[in-house]
Length: 268
Image (cartoon, rainbow, N blue to C red):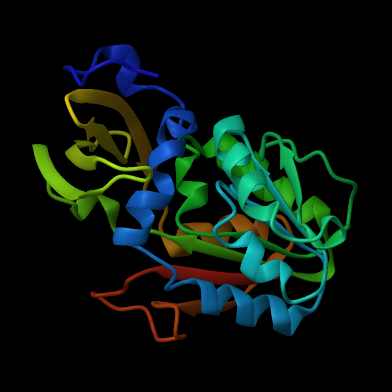
């Protein structure tokens, strides 16, 4: 894990998109509960129930979506590169009977470790594909999605809208609250934009205070803007046809105030 937040070096500005997620693991659920929460869960559950097929979640993290999806019945598999995130997913899913637990796989989504045509549904929620910071990795991942999908299978992609429009700021206190196990957590955040590369970088510093003790953990998360039209074009080139586009998790249209860019595409 990185030490205290400091001015980014050139190398830090070009770290791969998966960098930082191990360090984020102890704080992901805490922050998520106070910001994004569970508002996308009903959308993915409806989709999985409709398709009623073995499903794969890319970037499953701490298992936030896996458990609600697993309760529907069809087999569910989650894959993530971060061992620290997956450790928390294992702890969360351990409450279920062993026979009813989703499978967790540590792996690289640009080279999925699954057979061809094994899933009827693949989902990439919560801006997951935007952690792929170059076109090569994105195209590899999309080809892998097409490979593991059955004919007629569906892919669901959730993109964070218009990241370049986010304002830059430095060391802003974003959240405060009670820490798991006692004490207090403060999140201090810096947002930077790399306009040339279309990247938005979030420098995160979590300060945990328990009595006289203070622990500071700092890391960066980087996301790339991908427009819906660009994604549809990339998918069509590999035999995935756009079926629906939404601007929110209730199925509303895309507009200036969209909370998400949601794209569904089916394998021909």
